[in-house]
Image (cartoon, rainbow, N blue to C red; front, side):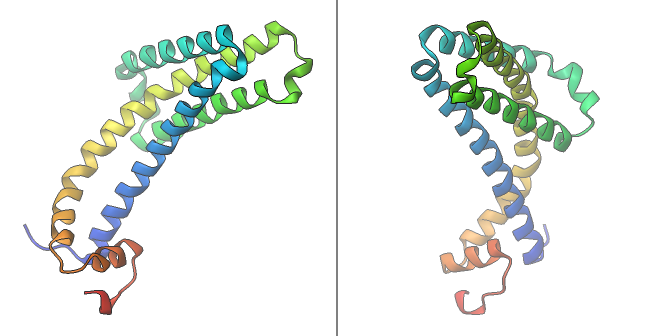
Length: 170
């Protein structure tokens, strides 16, 4: 295996870091909403929203072999999924703000449960895409990480990640 240019290696590591950041932040947002749903929305509605979210998520993952080819690419599926998660988070935010105070109980339930269902459907592509992205990226990243961690100083890796030439750090 030949040695790659440092800009290509840094690009691979940067792409891996971006994918990791996107996936971890989307999961953190979902976990936060799930943690807050019962105390803020009430035990019944919060629990029901979590059940709808996870049921739709599992269903979406089970149906992934059928709808993923329609989305065309991993990137497009990830974008669609993240927009769906954003809609779910927005429905929760609207349901807990004073704007929803004038809504009937049925409207609040519809808003929260509809958002949870939509978010669960959106989680399918995100879950499938994170596996695909990691499966595609990890074989490229592992040798580059080994190469960088063999260097004498941690500053060398940081310089490569930043995309700058840091001659003093090597």
